[in-house]
Image 1 (cartoon, rainbow, N blue to C red):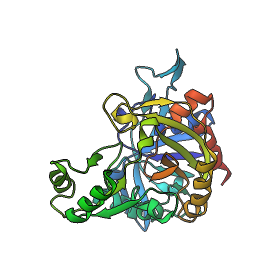
Image 2: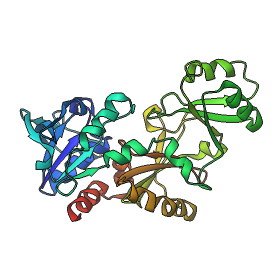
Image 3: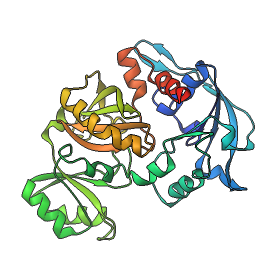
Image 4: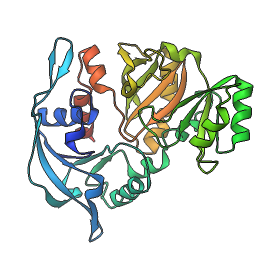
Length: 319
């Protein structure tokens, strides 16, 4: 089979951490062709989606002294060719946020792939429907108390009522722009003004969960079912557990409460064609549903001695 990956430039990826690379390696190891392109290399011609596609060969990472180690030259990329994406059996859309206008336009271009010929992971319609912060709001009882607003007064009153809260930009990634807000902070108004661009852009504000100090759990879901998890723990004076900001990772298990949340999400994710998803849970509460380029499988593989990449690829092959 042929697998295409719409990703950021290969040279920017970290092979020992990046989930896209793990998926590409898994596809290659299972005997499939691996191709790569970028969102800005998509076109619609004759009513079909085309792309500048490059065949990729990877030198897989190796486990050395408890960590993934990549070769100095970890991939080889052939000259690109302009080809229809329907020539691929599956297309993984894994461009990193922000979800901005060019990203949304790319999802519209992907709409011109015939789903009877090619599986797109995740569905472009699902990507448009599932803002990674807002999507969680529909799961009542699973999320902490949350508001979304650009109104400084509304946000300030929420923070004063709760004592402490976490502010999140709606289109960020990897913990970027997330702020800890505290009642009585003389900078509170300024922080809100900066984050909302003077009241022009809404932000999400959630009650602060003290359990965050014990970790922000990432659970990876495949077609709505959990296949692995990792716990990310803040370090130093940092309140965020994201790996991108230095969070420490540790082996973890999925609790009964977390399984209940996954069960609640499953039919909705399947309905929206969100096949490969990473959800974040703190203290038994769902905080985000990551659908654009969820990560974490390298770390899960390392701690559990598994290959989630192969599980994903084998599932795609079975569809």
